[in-house]
Length: 324
Image (cartoon, rainbow, N blue to C red; front, side):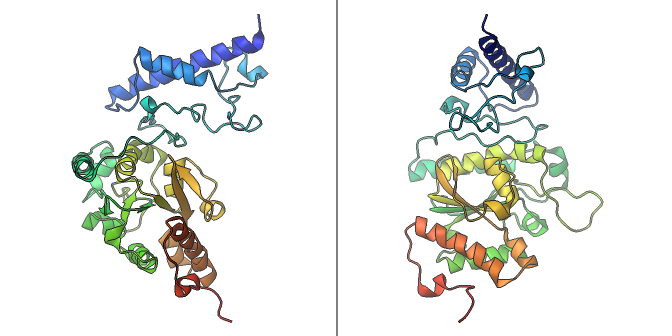
């Protein structure tokens, strides 16, 4: 008997059983994002069979876990999630249950693009579903509006923020408060208008603040996990050429990365094949208006313009640079 082979078989069987058990549990609470039939199990087993496993004492006993599954791209680097290498479009909605923290976004291929009339119809249907969503009872009871998103659904560029605030909740539109005013200035400085880009959030409802008359809070992991499928569908329909993630929460929701926006900003990421630029949330620049910090965000926007092959004027190039 080969102990490493036995450990691999045990690990795969436990993973498959856990995945199917989770799916059935999700269905009981109304979540239908993962296939749970025999063909789905076969696809999962086949995909997982390609994930290398490093045997260790912790992975060979009855309590074997998933910590020894490694990334196929780097044999020495532990993968953030054992399913991170799956590329089967049948699993393109692998979403945690509402009570689980969000896992890193699995990089599945995008579905085939739709023509303009079909896209418009699909977005209208999605909007109707999102507006009627009641998956988070605490948010439903406190919200005034469901903030679907705003802008051109055929846009080349998409901005993603954290969650609606009080102003957004009142008006039903993302980024309309003070941070929204600053974002609008940034968009205009790039050569766009708000109507030429698309703006959305990780959460479609304002996080409730029981006992508080003012202020906002960060979405919980469970809230993000519950709401993020709506954003995934939006992005799949809009198919922008580039995306900007505004702040750490947007990066966490889209990519599952929690390194911090200071470390991630300025470095291109990939969301399902779409180039994604993490940068500061406009609210950060309202708190810290140092020209050096403004320049960091602006350099990120210049990188976006270059990727989109758009002209950059000398004036744009020199924004927030120290004057000689």
